[in-house]
Length: 281
Image (cartoon, one colour):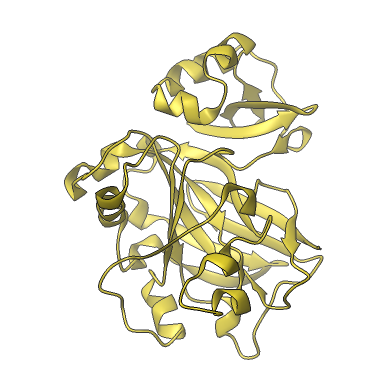
């Protein structure tokens, strides 16, 4: 199943996505589970799909997509986690996951505008796989980790490189307003039994700039869940963004920075295409 968060005529909703369109869940269902995160937490996604089945179907371009989870408690991101990216940045493979956080207002949904900040000319793209947690837990073992996953989505960890490198802490460069994107929807975990087989591709104005398999991760998804759950209680709707592969703009000669008007697409097999255009701040 595929689920998206969106607005219709300004009204926030969520619902089931098909190739034909989008069907919102019922008003009665929303009164009990007001957002996708609460439906995930209550483990009622199948019921949500049933209520949406009788609703009016909207075309994909008739709704305003929001980030898949508009109100996550945590967005935990992993740096230097693909071997191709580690090599292109001239780093040694880390012994432990390199983590930083993103704030919810730093990301937009599918087809919403990415904002190139006026403070920098070094705005970069990073196509990534996002993991959406479904069940809470601390000290989750690797063997149990995937049972805690609700689903997967595409992510663009848009990065302002000079601000990222002001210090050893990545926070400033990763949290400019509306610099990243999360979508277009969540594909439930039962439809992706082995995320390592997924293929990821990032395109700028149709040009392929990143391409490879999720299996190239230094720390795979079960390891990331196990590690993160040691220091915090992971909750339904929390997001773990697993890292980017080689091909980022900063590693190119000359560097390839995002410009106003650029169209950025992050496509992951079995999930879909997250598309955003860049505007100037």
